Length: 73
Image (cartoon, rainbow, N blue to C red; front, side, top):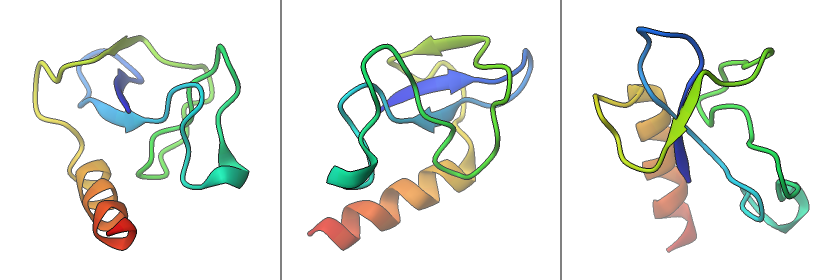
């Protein structure tokens, strides 16, 4: 997972990096990053990506991430 910002001044969203995905059928290709896991579109790509959150992440992304972690246990 990586944090990505769609436009300046907005919250950071969680996205899948290359080789990651919801399951084996939805893996991201090398050199690409998925749309945010909260469902928000990123039609023009991302402004920046970062490994650590510098600010609060999108609450919907965090909720989806937590739900997927509980489902995998």
